Length: 341
Ligand code: CA
Ligand code: CA
Image (cartoon, rainbow, N blue to C red):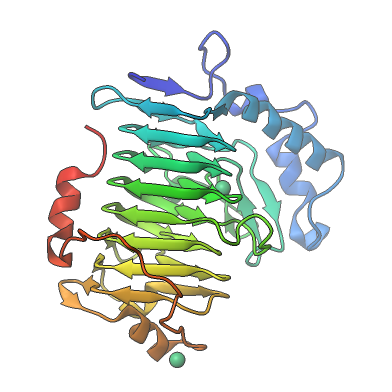
């Protein structure tokens, strides 16, 4: 592919706004009035207005969701290939490569209010790139971000950010043998999810993923968050500025087996190595060779010193991969090689 491809356009490539997708029975003003927790309570939204929101969302989905078939290489030509407002989906496919593309701002015009999620959250539908039941996939030399639509400029309703973004790269539904390397993930909240449910039916024994030589620059959480998967996380560079709402990088979920090796963290003022991992009902995490601001750190020890229950270190497997870089060269190698072009 070449140049910019936009998701929010009609069949003649004319721009579509959120108003163009909205069902006649939906407006944000009406939604905010009807489902205000002060009057509606903590039930999930339901009824004709919620149904109209769903229809509106489906109108947008028909335009922005693009599926990819098996045995496909999607490669950006030059250094300015861009998917803007697109949710690229690899579903039940095998043998796909996605390379040299700038993914920006897969926004949802119709976020849903979920009063039960983390004290109340606005949730959106579209990842930039979604892998569902996808096997043998390589994702390399891409950049993922919210583009010129950062969360920091989104409004707050019911005390929560009106979040129009979901994941940058989500790997779910029994996907397997996935490698994401030399990508840039920038300025985003929920970045990279591996496994979307605690139900083992599809994911147990799958979700074998390798993440290496990626730059995670000012991403707030899920870098990655893992359930069930055996995930080798090595030679990534994490830049975590102060004052941006950082939550954690490694989400240790149910039956997850993260093997983290030679990753480099730049942590801003007031952010500690104990913040790098987060317990999403996991039990073990292995890390070796981590450098934080140039100094060796045992992330599991730092975590265990501040939190209970402790993580064990036995994740039950070891990657066969060799050729891991020494940690101290990771920022330079990633800066030189990650992203398109
Ligand atoms: Ca998602
Ligand atoms: Ca402890």
